[in-house]
Image (cartoon, rainbow, N blue to C red):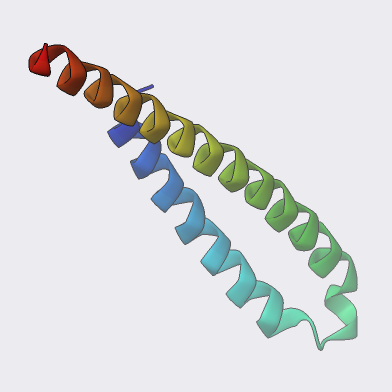
Length: 78
C-alpha cells in the first residue's frame, strides 16, 4: 500500500469514527440502547486502533523518504 492509499484509508476511517461518535451521542442517554452504545464503543475503539496503526505506518514512510532524499543530496554533492 502506498502513502496516498494509506492517507485515503486514514481519512475514510476517521470519517466513519465521526459518524459513530454522533450515533453514540444521540443514543447514549436512552436506556433501551445501552447494549448498542456498548457495541458502538467497542467498534470506535477498534477504529481508533486502526487509525493509530495507519498513522504510525504513514509516519514511518515519511522517515524513510527523508532518509532517501538526504542520501541522494549527499551523493549529488560528491
